[in-house]
Length: 258
Image 1 (cartoon, rainbow, N blue to C red):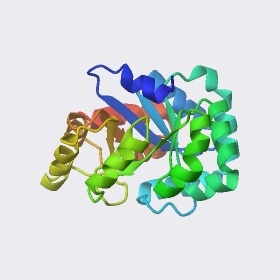
Image 2 (tube, one colour):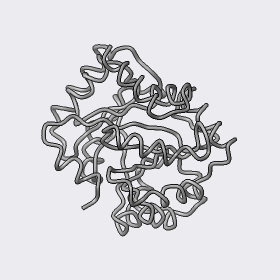
Image 3 (tube, rainbow, N blue to C red):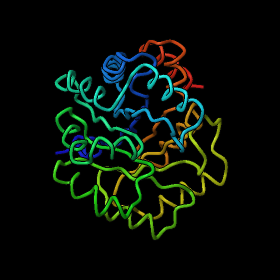
Image 4 (cartoon, one colour):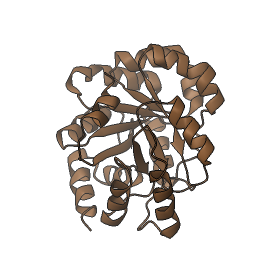
């Protein structure tokens, strides 16, 4: 069974926590240590960012991390080699998150094959058109048992959400707002109504809520309305400040208690 499906099937009442970081940041060779440290500290699933020069959906923190990673010499080929080196040590799901351009340049078939060889269970491609997903990417990904995770936002229509739910597997990435990534102190009434509206749809796929989660209020709101939460910008900031995954996690867990 794909590790993503296994995670959600076996979670029981546990609320999951997934963290994002950008491969190659803060240093070129820190990726493997960051992953293994997060696994050891109890993180449920890890999103590994593929650095790209024009990350349209990302805020300044993740844009900065991508710029640092590219300056450090990180590439998709180097990332796959680093992941392959630790494949046998990683038991939790790894999901690559990146834009379509570098993946297309690498080659869809080659990308899916490399993911499987390196222990990657899924991919999130924010700028992948759904029609291209269905006709070009999904048939290849299915052959490799790779989950392509789609995003929904408060602006996504109910019809499209149900269409995504019917045509994907793994989980749905529920973006908390239509804005770019970044830290938020709280989720306002409109976001709470959005969470409740999606809850009422009784979707087949589990959902993870991301974008803006940085403290106890936002974490609890996400976990109360989905299978779990995804944290990106807050962890990336802390990792950049300390250059040590253990220290960054200590500070993150402390912030999530406030």
